Length: 576
Image (cartoon, rainbow, N blue to C red):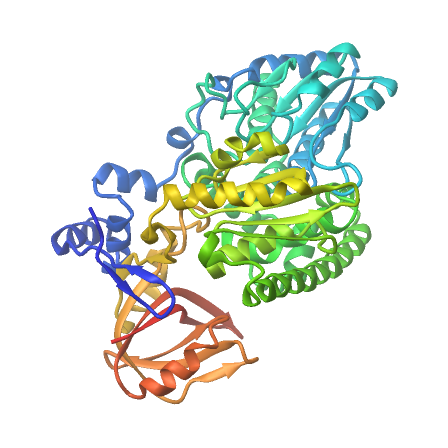
């Protein structure tokens, strides 16, 4: 079903379909507001069965037996043997939130079983990504007989051979796509292997680690530590995996759990992020809480992140939380600076996304830890696949890629592997390293691929509107109904609504010279709307005067001083 499109000020709008009979049927069957019913319909939930399945999660329906995951039973049996024989186990993680929460989950779950366990997280600059032969050799020297990777390892071909040589059983748990073949390890637990029969494939690394621990505890007849559900929640949201299926169930479960029990670390993170409410959302975690943990892995020793997450000493947790706050503020400043550097390169024509259909920029001065975040912002701003690279002194460019749904970056890098030293990731996000001399060739090749594979429509910046809404619809019942669609995140975004024929009540205001706030009127109702980082709309609306216009906006609830109000966050306008 092809949607009607219209051009907004910045984005092409894909308008919602309107089957009034079906919308009315869904609204009456589930006692939902019409815009929420229309959202379900436009997101493909057309049958009673699919709507029921989406709205109402359950353990029985959404969670599969962990033993279905390839090699998981073998891995758990080896861990049980290590527990019985007092063998030393090393957890090898990663420096992002997924890797840090995965490592913390393994530690918090294995320690109560009296495991002889320790963990190691690589430093982003000194050690780089993933397990290395050096780490395996050091583990062997220290008497470790089992290494378990979390959130990495699917490309650890040489470390796997070294582990065999050293008499170490290497258990790989990962969620990144394999590169055709897999390492020669004792066990490889990754649902994205072609021959893995586990029905759900979209876990973060922490989700795969959680399935391992779940089966271990199930076999031992024990209850998982409650903290495991909090760590699963944080890592899943932070790693921006689809919040559908089993991920959706566990995130809902975790949000319910943390509303009842608040750990020392979560309390500190909420305070830092100014999240002043008992019942938090996936959006609160994604925007205010997870970046703080990420900042530690990006700018300092990520081991502190694990100790902080599983810590029980209030003073120690408080001290690390303060460090996290300061690091996160520093990370934001660095991110803004890099973003402005790239914008200047685009404005001066050094980088030309219109001609090349891709943004590739590099610098020796950009810390590798934050360029992935900046790449995401550039994709949002310009609508083009983006690669940002940190240039090292030994002639290597290391970087992060972010893409658009229409262009599979993992496949594109796979087709260019002759130019690369290393790469890995997913269709929308990947990491890579290559010789600096190969960067211009890679740019030409990717640019040619994009031009060949994509149409001008594919490359236009688009937003999909889920439903029509009137200002008079926006009440507490509407917000209650919206909560049935949560948690919001990747593959289940907060709905974007089409509000048409509104007029300005008063002159709009520019806040901090970048955000536009205005009061709009329609259907006898006045509502505030704010457009973040859209200062160019100010002059457009001033010139438009009292004429009607349409907006594309998200709807949210604001709790302030005990009062609750329903507000609009505008994304774009269309002058009628």
